[in-house]
Image (cartoon, rainbow, N blue to C red; front, side, top):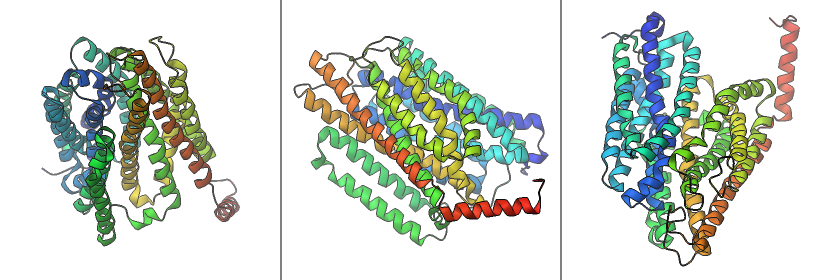
Length: 498
């Protein structure tokens, strides 16, 4: 069939595509948080220790982070609608595999497949909206963001309730009817499929090298904490080989994954290093927070643990856009310097939780949510504005990939710190730090100490991000004088500012 542009499409059909992309993307966002809530229950039922539980989450993140950029290139080559539909169907099939998994190995395989499909789905959701809505895409993307946020807000408590009253398997099975609805709507709106852009090279060697680099590093860190680092050194060598292959591939490629123009943009590099640090702290800390709350040291049920994330989503929904506008007006440096410090204070307050008192997490959660609201829009806008216009889509993919990689790297590092501190404080224990039963009083105290040590690492990452923003986002005096001169010329040429 002949593809039609967004400007020629009828609004009702455009609306079907919008709703389809919202439902499809919400599935991937919700699964990222709900699975963390279910991990203690999964660990008990599938006899999965802390390292295996980390893999249940990190296998998904690794697959997604490795394929974000390639998914965009595939959409450009084969059509965004087609890749979106494949992503939705693939995510549903992978969810079914995860839901019926009789052991943790098959569950991890299902999570990898979810990550592959999720990368196709999420990347091409936004690309499909931009192509479908044309000049109205800003409004459509705004609606996509708002409604996806609402889905993410509702997801954790629903998932926590399912885990508690039914089975953790239903957090995966629940994706099947929503995927079916998204597919029906996508096919109903098929006449508004975007025209294909000029195909970009897929650069599969670079994408494979990224997966090998971070996969080897992640496996070495996770399994090294369990079995000893002397037994996992080949994985670190594999990671180094992947990194070397990536560098060689990028240098030889006619159109590398990261064009040299982007790497020469100082603010773009600073913004992505900042994203790596701060999202590393966020991803790792929230992962272990969900485990800590449901451990015997605290005693939360899955449903109650999921509820503490509600204020974060609500505050983000109402305040993130406001801070984005303030950063546009005042510049991002102040907000990106202060935001990680506020987040660090929230992490510190969360380490004080020692009981199921429902008010105990509130101070830490509210402070953390304020820092996140101050952070998200300014850092995304800074990374995108720092890139040349022709690389805007690629810059968004890079920034999203970096945010995923931050959590991917930091989670096993915090896990290593937590394991080492727990073993040092409870040398006779053969249980995981976040076991839900069977811990002695000494083990319980060791769990709290280990969790606080891990959160101290997250606080350190936030402080490093704050310092980077303060120093790296300064406008050099020469650039500032040039900007002021341009403003003066503009006023002189058009005193009315029109």
